[in-house]
Image (cartoon, rainbow, N blue to C red; front, side, top):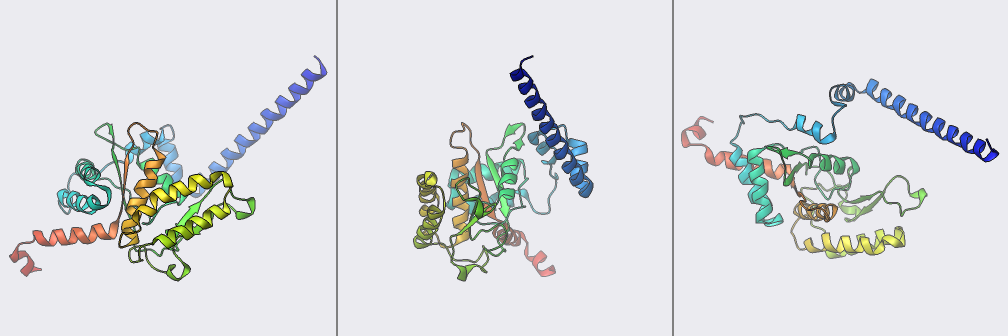
Length: 285
């Protein structure tokens, strides 16, 4: 064996040793998580051999009966989504809810950049209906939250490589000024073209110049088209859908994100339910 061979062997040993140590370290951290969180432990024990898509199928269940007719929900979603996302998407969303009334309700409303909820939505988009990939991704998100909460619907949370290490794990860029920071997503005014231009300048000033053109294009194509809407809640529905399309622009059969405010849906369902009541029923109430 030559000296070079010896050095190579020693290097391989160190590499293998490092990988093993890393693996052991990850296993120990995972075990600590399982010890602290019984739900995680039970999920991994019962479903650890499944892919994410296979696991999602075990959760994609619903009751055959409902307190209010399923048609009501389909009608409300259709009427809510149609003026914002178009007739085709609204019809598809309503149709799929009739067939598979399962929705994601863990998110906060607003333009969503929060890593945990974005990842959750991506996972939920893998669901199937009658064995086929769903065409829409229905998200009923909470709108009665301040725009400055930890998910930051006030603006954008970005996690790019283009920031300096001093900037930390993520960077927040506001669309709304600080005077609006305590407003709720469901009541805050719409952002205007001045807000969008200031938002764009702040991001471009802080990021790697290599990303400049891409950021300008994304903002111009997703935020600028909705500045004439009358509230941020409706703006968010469209901006989320447009950003989602960019995720899958090279996909042959992309899904459509239908990201709606749950309070609006609930209030509309109550109104629909009230119209179904007969006069004697109303009198009894």
